[in-house]
Length: 353
Image 1 (cartoon, one colour):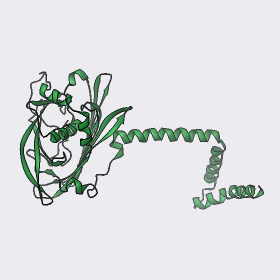
Image 2: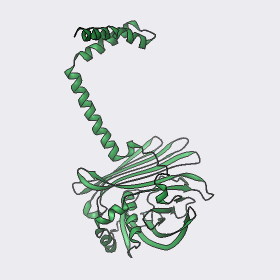
Image 3: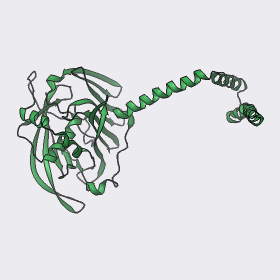
Image 4: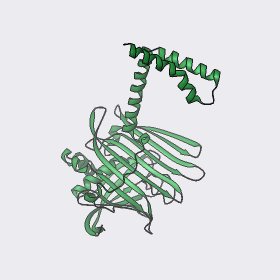
């Protein structure tokens, strides 16, 4: 899964690629499996925080925002981690963005993940939505790609046993936080992921030399790591990230891109100062689920009330028939006069009691 192709778009780019032999069996390295299996649940509370970075051009122009949050949640009554990542920006007057929402187990297994990318060009829209969910021992993936008026749908299913060591766009962010807090990457840290054609491919993590950066006039030591994402038919895409000692993301860039995502406020001072990217609830799995549940509850409650009070339908029906018969210019005044006798009768009944 990689970013919709548009030059210099500061959206949250996804995976990139390298040529691999067709039909070759790709597996995660034992070192990577041991690392993931060795994640201690006590490490997870240290990963529960928010990152907010600014996307900058080479000339220092503010192009957009990048936001990542991790929190404890539940899915189908099962405790899990909820990760939400979002990027929004405008390049050459074309809005573009990416949203990733993932429910993850303590050992980074994906329960459900939704990934949406878009670029709104002047004459058409490029839009990709990919949804994966674990069900009955399989990972079911559906992807819908829209280019202008053309819509393409792809579906694939993998046995979970074939996805040992899977890292997705969602679990990738949590994995990097854990690595950053440990400040050590195992040798041969090779995992599997999906490319844009939903084929299994390879993702490699390796360390970068530590360096110092300046944030708000303060020099900070940062830990660096590199993520190289491969694909069957294309060249690799490489991401370089640097983290503060507490695991907060300090910078993120795609090698070869003129854009850099940078932290401008230290976390302790940023909590009340930074501006969050507005959450588009329709694209958030948890919020959309709550909305649909609440919607069904209200529909059932309203239907029950109308059934218990049949005079409501009769009253509204009579009013609409009279309204359409008279066709008044001032509907509000007409409604006021129509319902006024009912108010008078109510007051009369109240006073008589």
